[in-house]
Image 1 (cartoon, rainbow, N blue to C red):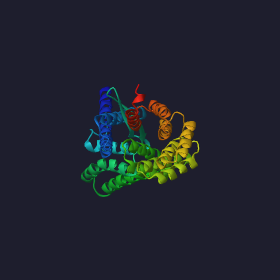
Image 2: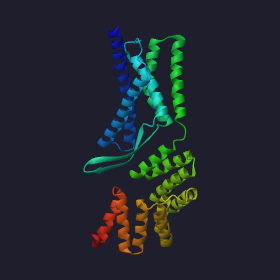
Image 3: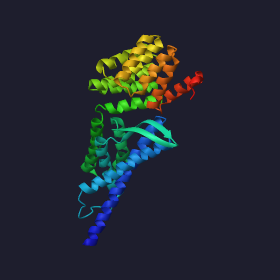
Image 4: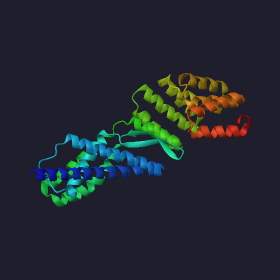
Amino acid sequence: MTNEKSGNSNSYIYSVIIEASIVFLILSLFLLIEFHLRNLLTVSVIKEITKTTLLLSISYIFVKFITTVVPQRVKNSGSLYDYLVDAFFSLALILTTAPVRPILQKVYFEENKPIFDQALVKFDALTSSLILSVLAIPLMILIIIKHKGLARNFYIFGMIFLILIVGFLNNKPNYDARIYESRADWITRNWERQGTDAQKALKDAETDSEKAVAYYWLGVSENRKGNTEKAIEYQLKAIEHDPNYGAPFSSLSLSYLHLGDLEKARINAEKCVELDPDYAWCYYALSGYYEYSNEKQDAYEHLKKALQLDPNAEDLQNTYEEFIKNNPQFIE
């Protein structure tokens, strides 16, 4: 009897490991495809995706072990059909409950070591349905082979119904995902897509603070595309929703600087510093004002401050290098 229980326990352990491996492979596949489409797929990103999904799979095994009593008798010998059924329901549970999709906003390197600033969000409705369909299609083929009559129809319609339910649940507003995506688009300099994702975030926003952030990223997108008046309109809306949010004032300052209104550029940059003294772009905007005013010392000091606060920001680095090139007296 003891040997029988031990054998059943081992079979159960193997089945859970195989099930978790299937979940790991499918989630990894879809994450790799997404980052390839974003032109962000590098060796470092592949490692990060692998780590995220592997940790999820290991966590899944642990949770299943501590929440499930090992059955006295293993009902099957671990057929492909049983593995796919278990993995299908596990994926449905994971997709509706766990934020497992990493959005890498920044990928920095220090001493050849990547540094990831990432966020985890849930998959959207369409992607969730596609993930489940990867298992649903072979499962349906096996169901057709294994079952007949009403049982076959019941299982097939049940799977389709579950896919629709998962899609419906993941079709709810996903504000965090949209904002993170908009920031990621900014990092990769895809201004058009950044605006599109920010619009989606605005649609999903519920609080004034969330709307302010969405309007800010919309304004940044328009600024980058050269639509200065539209950028100002969005940033003013951001400030209207949250007057204590510092970031829109930096963007406003840069817009007014572009229009040649130095006084408004200065006022908004200083307001940004007042509200958010640790935000690098406040000092970047103020540096721009001083440079346009031909106050080179102040421009240099504020630009250096911006770079100290965010040393990995590519735009800040490029601006600093260009400034030093044009003003060699500030070379240290």
